[in-house]
Length: 225
Image: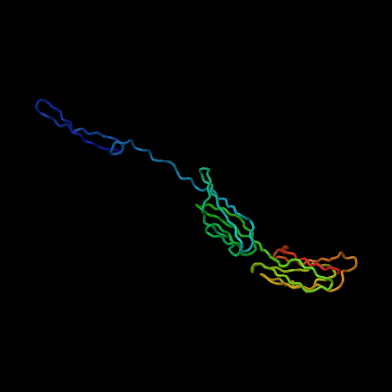
């Protein structure tokens, strides 16, 4: 800043005093301080975002945590709190704090967005099945068995009997269904066929729909005596 200052200077000439006005021009602030050059520094900007998950696969009803890391124009990185979104909330939801909850079987893409950049990670949601009991042993007289399958109401499944050509495991309900259920079956009376390893064993297998993935086996045995 340029300032103009006027001073009066007294000069004596004989008995006459002359007042001489002088002007001093100075640069900078009014206090005479040296001016400071404007700063050319700019804030670092986000150039990309990477997303990681505590687990790539979760069961229906269970959770995983996602985190986002930003890379900046100055070469640094830092964990950030972005805006989170799921591309399929019928499969998985995500909270503002990055907690992903499995809703139904499938795959959802979880995306983090901040400062015009985004990054994502895929989360696969699968069904889980708890079977009780999972092992049966029958005598020669056979009998009736019953087992309970616990799973989410969004999970579809069915069972099939894999005993042998003799079909000694009967009446297994193979109807596809959603959620938990109790299944019954019968084991026929009679002796173990000649030459057949004793005890004979069979399997009632639970398969998930769609995909027909094997999720549980119930083992059924019948002794000769």
